[in-house]
Image 1 (cartoon, rainbow, N blue to C red):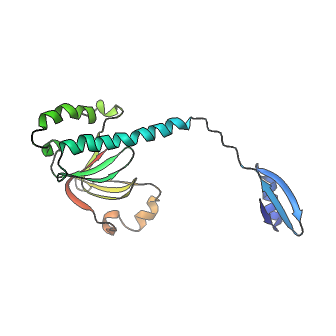
Image 2: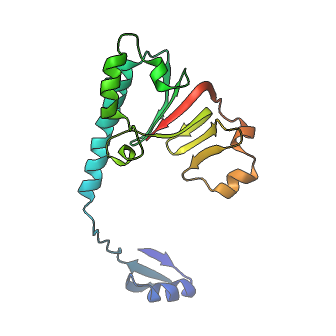
Length: 190
């Protein structure tokens, strides 16, 4: 419900699909609209369940897999999302930083957590390597910048930001508005 003296606003409101009632109050008009009906054709409970089951899976991946087989001095978590894990490791390959004495157990268990070929990467629940780079700037979930290993190749995501605006102010690497972690490798597992 709102009040107006402008007859053009009243005229527009009369033509809207959600118009409900019009009352004249002195020299003003009282307009009333009904709320639009929203019909949900998909069951949102499934979406909620997927997100709720993704959270424990990410925590299991971190504590039951990474924390068990790797020393915390050899990797650092940069950021975690419901389906992605951004981290840095201190070696060229993940297999190079496995704790001493746990290599055989790691080789047996890694196929329960990590995708090992292009077909297993499509299996739900497995973590696959999305990209790797030498530097990452992560501001928040879905807002990051990765300099990949091959020189000029870069990967970035900016949810909620317009690309045109961020391009006009310079590249992310030239702004340096957040200190980037320089490391041997930056891994994005999703």
